[in-house]
Image (tube, rainbow, N blue to C red; front, side):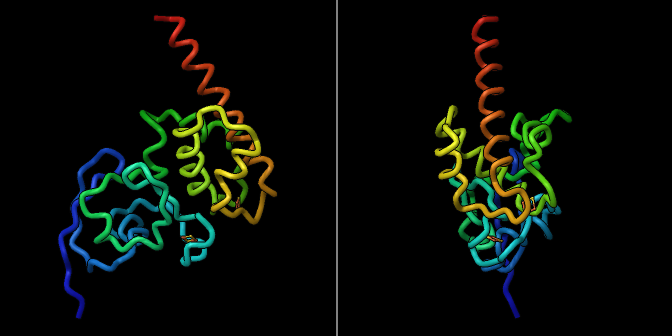
Amino acid sequence: MSTETAIRLTVNGEGRTVSVPPMRRLLDVLREDLHLTGTKEGCGEGECGSCSVRMNGELVNSCLVPVLQAEGTTIETVEGLAHDGVLHPLQQAFLQCGGAQCGICTPGMLMAAKHLLAHNPQPSIAEIREGLAGNLCRCTGFMRIFESVLSAATSIAGTSQQETHAR
Ligand code: FES
Ligand code: FES
């Protein structure tokens, strides 16, 4: 018999409480208890990055995080990227540059890319390659993913320049 514990989280800006066994994986809580199925399971062993989410601003493999460890944290998942029906520039760029094929790695790639751009808004291809090194893709050969991130960084930089000039 497993004892359930109430765990409070903020997920994509919304306060959520779940009653689950404390060692349940954050991945399962997101997908099965909160019905946020955007986050994908690839290996289930911390090797592929498909399950990447941001927890208190750090990139984590949610298949390795017991939900107890996530108590009181702020979680960002792929569902939090688009706003008011408008795709995030990273999502736009993945679409336009062919950065997604089967899509299994894509949510994790997007979260890893978001994390990278939060720390390095204008990365080189080499820095993108390094930033996404924990995320595996079996379909694209990676170059299109790296180009998508580069394109998104350029588009975000262009938008912020326009905003600065508009002020
Ligand atoms: Fe979590 Fe592969 S499913 S790292
Ligand atoms: Fe299929 Fe990356 S698009 S694993």
